[in-house]
Length: 357
Image 1 (cartoon, rainbow, N blue to C red):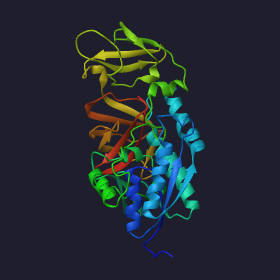
Image 2 (image 1 turned 90 degrees about the vertical axis):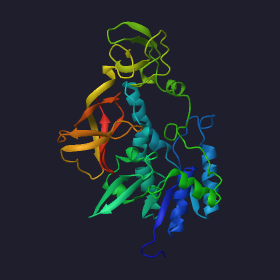
Image 3 (image 1 turned 60 degrees about the horizontal axis):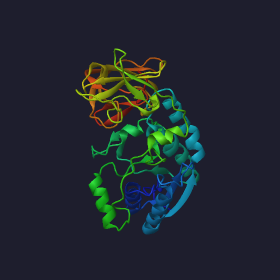
Image 4 (image 1 turned 120 degrees about the horizontal axis):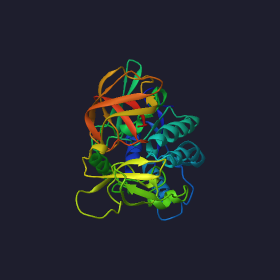
């Protein structure tokens, strides 16, 4: 029987160093820790780009080293229904989705959480670099201390119930310290490379992967005046602000993707990083989600409109009909439909939504 301050915690063990150290820290604190390895992708998972078999072996090795039980659970159906179908739908519509955001909300903190509760868990833990603060009966999602690894952006769709059941033991640590802990306790994956591919799908050639699910529709690359300067392979393969892979020759400033003319299947390209078409002062977001289960009041905050960017000052008005307008005093570069805009009040992640325009 656990004492009142000790819990039964189910940890999502991915085979990587972050979740491994998460499990170690919780066990060290005296909690009863159980590991679960989530198998969320089955299509072509035996090819060279999907590391699920090796990841599962790594997770089991870590569990053995730490002396905890581990289960392998298949959420492939839930992933296809709740995440991957949306992923394809967005690309088909010419937008650029972020599947990691939906994967966290629908798989790691819904399907996995529900399963963990059937195991008698009081809460779940993951290796995310984020923090949580409980105050006056509310659960606040905070940025991780390691600014270069902070993952609160990917967690902005978590609600109060999900946050109440979640632990983020790595939130106070830097990545270098996590790897050092892994080395000190003899984990074989201490130096394992971080995954950078699509959530649960792996690091595979993106164009080739999408071709398996969506038909390609080549078309023209044109300037803002309509001059044809090249051919694109399909609008779904490009994102706003993209520079590499355009194949446009000639001299002068480099070319960037500035917009998609979906009705005419044309890719609008411009020259120069700071071209006016790449800079916007406003964005509109829908499919809103708030970590405190209610939108923030009108006022000045900071925001990220993509993961790898510095916080930018912004102003928001009252949310109307599940639609949010964000104004940036300084214009932002390559605001991309399909990506998420996430609002912050200092270190507190308030939530956000999917950029519509």
